[in-house]
Amino acid sequence: MIGLYPGSFNPFHKGHLNIVEKAEQIFDKVIIAFGWNPEKGDHIINIPNSLDNKTIYTYENSLVDFINSLPFEVTVIRGIRNSTDLQYEMNQYRWLTEMKPDLRMVSIFCDKEYEHISSSALKTIQKISPELYKKYIVE
View 1: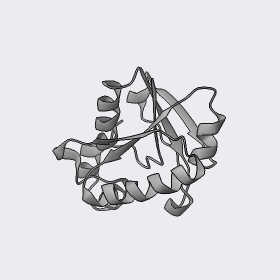
View 2 (view 1 turned 45 degrees about the horizontal axis):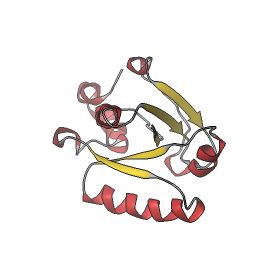
View 3 (view 1 turned 60 degrees about the vertical axis):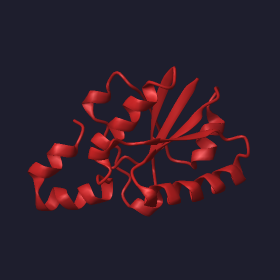
């Protein structure tokens, strides 16, 4: 079974890595798919060196179009930090299944030590405290 962990990952941080590591315990293979989110501004794909041994894809179309282009079946992996993420992901699941009724998706909760980390917050932290930023980034 193949898991697909899609996201803009801008930047890819330890919370994301925590989800990948948990997914690797469930799936035979995990693909990390760096996608472009027009609501998140610039399309910057920064793949950390520590992911060299991971399977990485990039895509610029919709997630459903990307999944449909794959020559194999996948289960989408979504990381959940807190109840806000859960609410958001439930809504996303409804939209995605409108476009792809046979979509399979699982949610994986991050460990407590990562539940406050978000890429958006880290972009702000990077400007204020570069040392704190480095603490949470996967290089």
